[in-house]
Image (cartoon, rainbow, N blue to C red):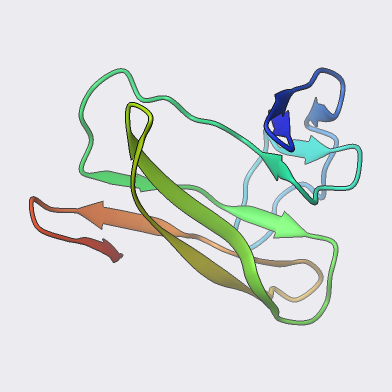
Length: 108
């Protein structure tokens, strides 16, 4: 986890969250501080054409750009897409996923 591009410790806890929702199933990664500027970086060991995850935020209304997936080839940005979170019914979230083909990156 980074915050404003700086590696941090102690701002996440595993399994301290809302439990099972329509978008997530434990174990949950839960932010212990203000998530603004936070980024969870996932490095995949091999080429992948699909990626997705579930999330829940403490809100009961729709949230524009609640999460974003950005793709990189090394340090080179390839593209990104934001997803709107929707109430489910007690926590706002969605299951963002991407399907990457040779010529495009599309939500799936």
